[in-house]
Amino acid sequence: MYILILATLTLVLYWMSEYYRHLRNVRSIPIRIHVNGTRGKSSVTRLIAAGLRAGGKRTLAKITGTLPRVVLPDGQEGAIIRLQGANIIEQKYIFRYATDHKPDAIVIECMAVNPVFQWITERKFVRSTISVITNCRPDHQDLMGSTVESISMSLSNTIPQGGVCFTAEDENFGILKQVAAKRHCRIVQVRPHDITEADIKGFHHIEHPENVQLALAVCAEVGIDRCIALPAMQEARPDPGALRKYKIKDGGKGIIFYNVFAANDPQSTERIAHMLTDRYQHAEVIIILNSRADRFYRSQQLVEAVKHLRFDYLLLTGEICDKVESYALHHGIGMDKLVRVGDPLPEVVYRKVLELTKEESHVIGIGNIAGEVKYGAQIVAHFRHKMQSLKQTRS
Image 1: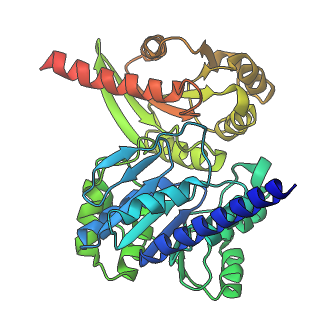
Image 2: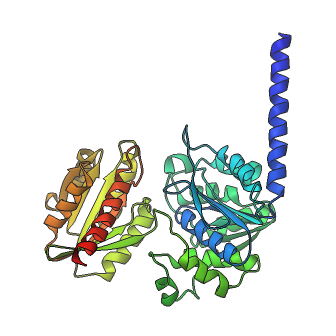
Image 3: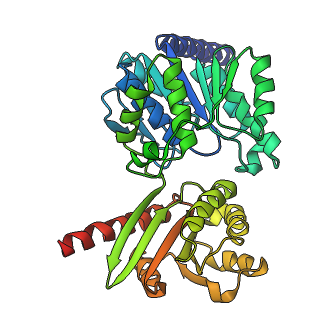
């Protein structure tokens, strides 16, 4: 009995000492930025870090998007190796690692989805001085609630006590504002009014104006001017899940492939797809929807999101194509538009797209990019490789 009590006391004392050590690590970094939201977290984290580095702030960033990464103060990146899956305790080790680099600032993408874990991550691990909430859209409704209001309340868990919060959210800004007031936190609603088309064209990928404006606002808060921060953001390495396009010429046909896999909540997917299909109203449009066996509800949401779009074919790839096909048929998508491919080698998917293309097609990849075999990521890599190899062949 005494041994059990002694062991328990020892364990409690160890936990207490570890937590105080963590708080010491946290306080050693004066600028702590916690980035949350439904979409754009990874991109905004990278943009803020790039702007801070350009402004002379020694900055470490942690991204938990398509691929978990640490961006070092010199801009180099390192992979985060997870032996047992994602866990919010990871944030403690990131701070421990960060202190070795003696940073002025740390930018951390929120890795929690469960509202309780979001609260714990902010209050116990990050204790941010600046919070960012990109937007509040329907996603992870099994954990954050079935309404946008409940999702907004969940995301508001990372609004800090004191400090400042920047957000591009519009529809549910009032909810965030109320929470910020209770926590004595200044909240700023950002609008991309001064982001020009030339600014966006300066990026090597398709960046959203709201993301750029949020990052610029955070940089301005710590004293870094737009003329210094923006060029650095334009040259920063994008997240692997960033919206990019690949132009392919093959056998007299043209394929323009858009990687929209990372925007896998229905509202974001529909917005981006609308943007692309409205821009090319008379072009042939092929949508690739990649599914995962454990995320059928997400495939259902995406089918409902795209059924109103203008497209010629919906290619179904991944693990549960038969179920997704049945759902699509039930929701009014004609059999003549559905092409079930499954998860063969990505070359088979590419060949099917080429076969369906008459002269030039705009191909939009949506759904799950990751999963056990990362099949969505394989498709993206294959289309990118095709673009590069065919260019080299022509030259």
